[in-house]
Image (tube, rainbow, N blue to C red; front, side):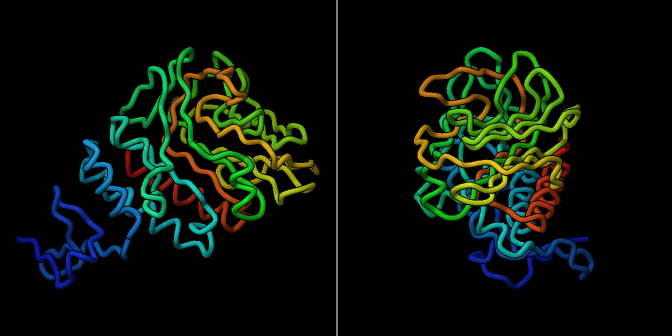
Amino acid sequence: MGLNFGTGSLSDKNLYLGDLPITSIFYDNNLLWPLASATDADAWIAQVEADGGSLTVTEKNAVVALENDLKATSGLYEDLINIYPLVGGDEASCKYNLKGAADAFTNTIGFSGSWAYDADGVTGDGSTTYANTNISPADIAAIGTGISLHVYLTVNVQSPSSYDMGSSEQSVIAGFNNTTLYGNFGGGYVTSTGQVSGVGDLYSSQHTNNASGTTSVWKNGTSVASATKSRNIGVTNTFYLGNDNRGSNVEYGNKGYGFAAQGLYLDSTKMSGLNTAVQTYNTTLSR
């Protein structure tokens, strides 16, 4: 029994054994783990470790697979602007954007308050926590068409009432001390009752364009409610994770998150692909 590290160069690294990047693992000449290139994941891992963050082999490989799985659905990876893997058990590993290499990792999450960083990802304390993602509704409108917000719950505590991601009430809310899923982009809330229970679910809100259009809320890649609503693209308050940024912090929560993202509008095929990738990622991490 032995490991054969294949013939690929280290520049093609995509799997990690400790700190050693390798291209493939063979057992008795049988390929056990072939993964395609994961350029952003490699840069993300290097940045986390350079900042003193700690990642296990399983966590590194999960992030590599997350990037590859998101890229498996045509156009999905491109339409996600910020992707936060929220893994590693410390602030340095949880704050970085998987797509951050393009902006020299300046667009990171700024965690404030007493967040818990552990195997569940990040969890608020219900009284002091918010996390600035450093992108606003106006910023997203300047990039392209529509908007989408996404959170994966690993801890679901509904008291106090809280926003899961918000900017001046433009938001996704997976339960506001209830089981209702909410989405709003300036034209009023779209809601679906009875959607929020337990953990291990991906919740999303979207708007189809940069003016009047359709606001919708989604659970695990499936639309559960929608309505014609206007959209306010002039809001410059940046989105907070675990809170709503109205120029101050107004809705502290104590939920836990194992993934978060923001992007342009995603059609049903892309939403299905997103859910598959996020569920696989968190299952790999035993969440």
